[in-house]
Image (cartoon, one colour):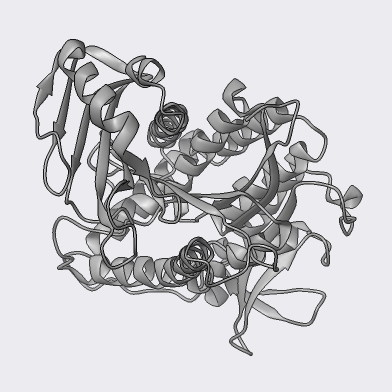
Length: 437
């Protein structure tokens, strides 16, 4: 968008998932220093568990207009959280080994209330936060300052989900600890409001609904837990891990679906655009297990090996880079300018169009693709912004064909999947695939 006019308002939601959340840090590092986002304003951040840590660090520095400082703080925190010292490496190796052992034999578990190291770990976690954020200077955030921050947790006793809001609650190191208090590793955290809190992974992971109060044009979700698995969980540890992933994804998907439903009702004229509702575009950046070089088994969520953490962050930066390229391609597509669209295809690119769309392919090379872009892509097909865009193994949009009867019952709808090489399109496939989600 034109930075001299209205800036696009964006809220970013950060899912948690143990060490895998280093991926979230990598995504944020790339986004916060992106020149492409100069025309955007981050109006809200939310997070749960490790995602709350990432959201906190981004929020703290963005309030001061220091996106570069936020990227440095994210890098420094995860470097601190890595097992670099010899004794930390030994403990990390034992932890991952013991977690893997659960796949084969029953391993005795120890309550964090009987484990001295749960207290030590909590204190060290607090110190790592306080090295990056001076919580003594953090008060309740005034209206009109951006971004705001939401931190997800659940009250163990009342069973209430809680999204701590920086506009109403003072965010402290204890607030973040409460959001990250995994019951099997850490003791519950009692806060000033009288609540006793556990890890927010059991509630909103991450909070999304409350982000809409800031009036964003778009919500970007950084997702750790996979929506789909290639093979079913078999061991006790794998089953428990998948159960936790699904419970965390449940509230996220419900909240995103409610936003999409409102978008569709607005477009169909069943809700007034002059009322309290507005269209919010939803975009998801997901950790891609098929494109990540290392294994992401259950035990790896506890793995603090420096190389593993670095690889996850690098993967996050790469996914964010592809996401930014997809945003730029989408803008060119929506401009209906064939030359702008063609600027994204590599010389050896391939485009395939299949039912329900016209202009059946494949088209190979820029000369053939240009003909399809001019005759069909730039004129007939439109990205459906009432449905989410997902950057996972590939970038996928729901696409609508123009012309004919445009009623909901007769709408021609399919999926576009884009495969990028750097900032360029290597392949684009249009067809009747599963809806992104």
